Amino acid sequence: MEEIEIETFEGVYEPAEDSWMMCKYLPNELGSALEIGCGSGIISIHLAKKGNQVTSVDINPKAVNATKFNAKQNQVDIEVLEGNMFEKVKGRKFDFIVCNPPYLPPTDDYDDPELALAVEGGSTGSEFTIEFLSKAGEYLKKNGNIYLIVSSRMEKLKVNWKREVIHKESFFFERLTLEKFS
Image (cartoon, rainbow, N blue to C red; front, side, top):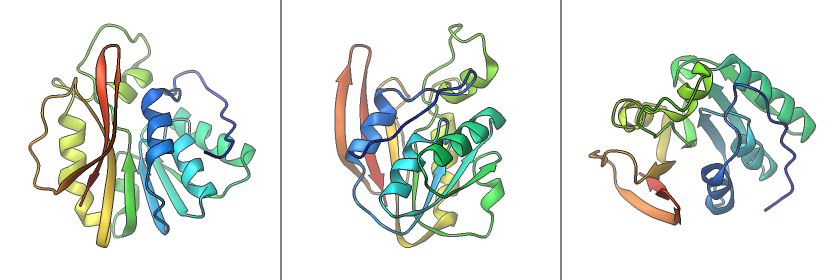
């Protein structure tokens, strides 16, 4: 994997095992890419360094600023938008969409509401992902794919997408899977 320098910011999800796993094992697709929930920008920067045209969206204004800063530090051009899920890209289509979604059930571990938003995926951990997958098809070009991190701590996903496991790793408290949805 290429060298990426990431500055971390308070109130923004720091790259962790899930982020690094996605960067390392994402297939080498080229084209227009959309990242929903860009956080620090590491995945978007990785995609831009591979030659993709990248659009990044995050609901957290601090994450938007972090992604812009980190993209500049890594000398890549990324369109970074502040908004909830797909609201800022209405009418646009992408070759592929990536998302490392908030997937944990709520806990009292996060004092910072912006950070809680980045990790908590609803009461079962899967609500964000279910909503994301219900809308994502509208933003994909024909034969487009979605790459998504799925956690064993989420409620099992029941969705109408063809699923393929790209890579899985176990950590001390969960199993993470990078999956392709088509």
